Amino acid sequence: MKLIVVGAGWAGVAAAYEGARCGFDVTLIERTDMLLGTGLVGGIMRNNGRFTALEEIRAMGVHDLVNVIDQNCLHKNIDFPGHKHASLYDVNKIERAIKTLLCQSNVTIQYQTRINNVNLEDTRIKSVVSDCGETYEGDVFIDTTGTFGPMNFCSKYGNGCSMCIMRCPSFKGRVSVTGLCGIEEMQAKKKDGSIGAMSGSCKLNKDSLNKEIISRLNKEGVAIIPLPKEFIEDHLDIKACQQYALEEYKNNLILLDTGHAKLMTPFYPLEKLRQIPGFENARYIDPYTGGNGNSMRFFAIAPHENNLKVKGIENLLCAGEKAGMVGHTEAIITGILAGYNAKRIINRKALLSFSRETLVGEAIAFTNEQLQTEEGLSKKYTVSGSVLFNRLLECNLYTTDIEEIKKKIKKLDYKL
Ligand SMILES: Cc1cc2nc3c(=O)[nH]c(=O)nc-3n(C[C@H](O)[C@H](O)[C@H](O)COP(=O)(O)OP(=O)(O)OC[C@H]3O[C@@H](n4cnc5c(N)ncnc54)[C@H](O)[C@@H]3O)c2cc1C
Image (tube, rainbow, N blue to C red; front, side, top):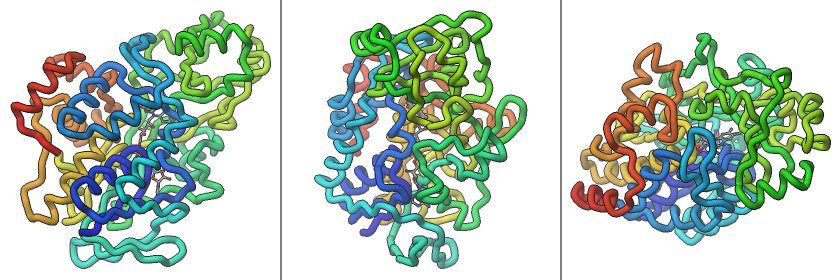
């Protein structure tokens, strides 16, 4: 059984890991030289409903992946505006730890390989082909290529290439497997109706900040610096991560310690930033032009079932931002489900959709329903805030009671 996963962000990593657990010979194909994609500059886990989601997945049997994340956190159980009990992983260390886990799971990782063609037989993919002409045959394929850029989209719908972690000038732009199959994809919209969404945070070099801020970050994980009125910039509506589109994130500089100082705004002019006490020497390290803009995302969501099969192609699944969700945890839960359902495709069994009695099941199904509407395409879906978290609260699915979560999963008899 050969499983080909294209795109090694959190969704691809989780899908490859689960595929290997299910007995597949897995090849994970990545266009850059690192795993984790946008997860290389994120770091926030377990905030609000993400706690429940991760524990539900753990209760289903996904221990090692969750443990590696927990072991690589710099801060645990911290609160910041609108968000409770978050943990922050170390963006400088997590990639190596995940690579080790995948190698132990016998996943073959193919770096610097960009897929740009597919060979189809009716509605089945036979193989995918790289820029260099290498062909990768498989029984099942998972599209986890994300929704960022490419550069011309960042220019057309954002403030230009911001020189972000995706490094398109070197590794070339994102290419969607679903798109290559001729399936029409969905594009998310901003509140004003324009296409895409801007990534919502930047990384400052922690060492470029003053001692007091560094010490607060190291100790507490969070530093909140109120902004004088004339320094306030409003970028809330353009953010991909609508869970942080709260007034506090406009009126303050909110910094989180993820190894770097994660600044919770899409961009902030450098000259202005350097006038704020403590930031006189501030330097952006992701994106390099964090004073001017950020990467653009949500240009290519695959039409899919709640079991994550891409509509119209028999042996293609999707996960992560391709499934319309924002966040590492969201990428992981969908990646795990896609990896699990790959085996069901092989065994010709009905594919699994998580029950809506679980937070993960409701999250995937609700997001999918919303994406079918014009209004729904202008919203963003994360279990940590905004419209989806409100829904989960209404359905009484958010809990931090691990025993309660275990009982529910046991009752549903989910063993992945
Ligand atoms: C600046 C920033 C900060 C963020 N902070 C957080 C945070 O703190 N917490 C959180 O939960 N979420 C955060 N997010 C959101 C989160 O990172 C993403 O929603 C999630 O990680 C997406 O994972 P993914 O695997 O779906 O896609 P991606 O991370 O986009 O990964 C897709 C991968 O596919 C590869 N790829 C694309 N096309 C091809 C191809 N044709 N062939 C081979 N490879 C290909 C790409 O190189 C990439 O590695 C942040 C996002 C950004 C941009």
